[in-house]
Length: 261
Image (cartoon, rainbow, N blue to C red; front, side, top):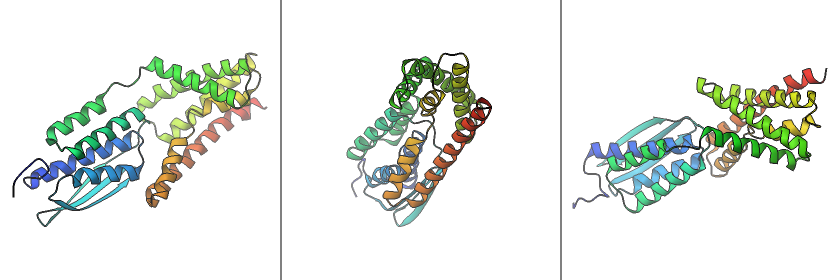
């Protein structure tokens, strides 16, 4: 058989292909891609090699499994995964990489280095993230009927709330605690604005600022996974989204219980 770049030359190389595909899948999960899309991408990477057959991929939000046959030998591999912060830019870069790789498979070490470059790519600066958080929160408050002063207050509440959670997230807090703190900070700073007479409607300020922490993408991805027959992944995503919503409700409720007394 004539060897080319779309054939695995030996078992060790086949394992490297699997490891690279799982690394790609791990990054997709990390940056917020749907599980069904991750599974499909891993499968296509392996299918680009003609002597890798019987490819099966199973993905969850905390782990990826792949099994395939090489020269009538079954090889199985597992990779731990965890959901991080949503990054649509890196998801786009990973999708572009996978499409290009499937059309023209390249040396695995080169591919792995390209994936590492994508993972290490600089994100937006912290001040820029604060500005974006404040603007998003203020426009959400306007969307829900806030006046100009409430929108201004929401801008600063969003900045301080997001900044506080971002700083504390470096201590490896669970998603439940992060969501609780985000809602607590939002409600607390909103109450301060009302007490100081800077804002008029605490509801509009809180609603606008907690939208930064509402699990909209998680719920959407979970529903899309369920619609793609990935029921287990979808249910896990829905349960996580419910717990995030519960944490937000508790954080807001604690502050409002003191404000209304």
